[in-house]
Amino acid sequence: MAGQILAGIRVLELGQLIAGPFAAKTLADFGAQVIKIEPPGQGDPLRKWRLLHEGTSVWWEAQSRNKQSVCVDLRQPEGQDIVRLLAREADVLIENFRPGTLEKWGLSWEALHELNPRLIMLRISGYGQTGPKAREPGFAAIGEAMAGLRYLNGEPGRAPVRAGLSLGDTIAGLHGALGVLLALYQRDARGGQGQVIDAALYESLFNLSESLLPEYSVFGAVREPAGASLPGIAPSNAYPCRDGYVLIAGNGDAIYTRLMARIGRDDLGQDPDLAHNDGRARRVAEIDAAIGDWTRQRSIDEVLAAMLEAHVPAGRIYNVADIARDPHYRARNAITQVESASGLNVEMPAVFPLLSENPGAVHDRAPTLGEHTDAVLESAGLTAEQRSALRAKGVIA
Image (tube, rainbow, N blue to C red; front, side, top):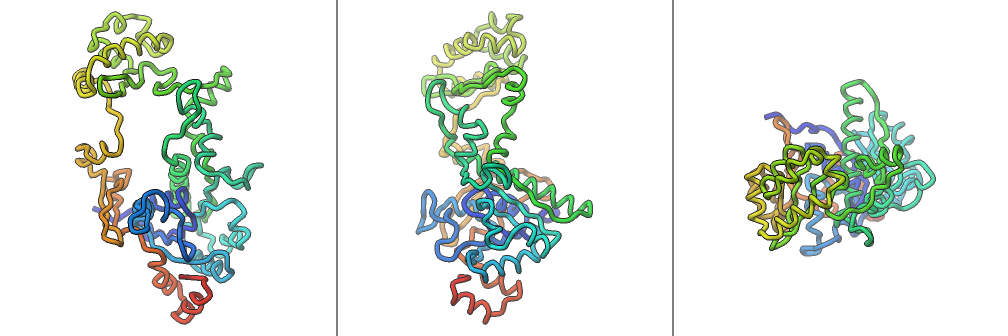
């Protein structure tokens, strides 16, 4: 089996929290060397987010695997000089500060590109690097709202809800990682130079918005919140059982016929007006009521067994405990375990997607704060005396 596909690519990560670091994690999982720059003292704030073990977030262990930690104060001129030094030899620089921050530090794209014309710069922000809102602060929740996602989430007539995850950040991180791969291909396979990738949180989510804008532009239609259903696609909903809810997606034409036969409603299954989705969408309330009448008399396990027998897509609604004990996750090695620096064994998602010849891998635990400062800066040419002087001034740690 060949080595990791991004081996030899050096990434300088200046970002914090989720979006930029998630993009860097994605690249690190496939072999890129990621040098994470953290502020001296507390480091990346993610180290203190959510549930902590011995003072460190277990989220940190997943988000920062396969990375090296170098503590540099970017607010000091000497710290900015260190970034310039490292950027000379980097393939990629990732940042997710508010637009204008790097420019204030003398680390603009123009300045770094002059130092290293082959450098690829990924810039993730709430609203992008240009436009009237560019300089406004923007977190994932705001991006989700601006992209229309928050409007759709929830029950009709009730306050919008969020998904419970920072989707705006992680989806922007994935878009950013894709942009990096495209730019690397252009540079290395087609003889190009470095370039800037401008990834906005709201645009990354907007890119996933399916038919929202096409339908509005043609029909003036505004898709409304619909709870657990998928508007205009029928039947696809969460249906009540004796012991909870089950998801059934019977929206394919042949699948719908099999579903109706299995629940004893061939009158609906063989109705020519319901043979295709447009007809079913007009009578979705009637169809959902028939399915719900059948499911609520049975347990989740009974419904799932019947749907499996009928070859109808269906599933239980997992919480994380269900994920942790599910045999399919284990059979596909979708869950990996990493021992943290403190000796704690932490389970986390494995590397995705699965490549047959150049698979990703978790080869290093998340670093302690500043664990690689000396090694990385020595490799960059800073002597022990220079590092000692910088450490005494609080530039590095």
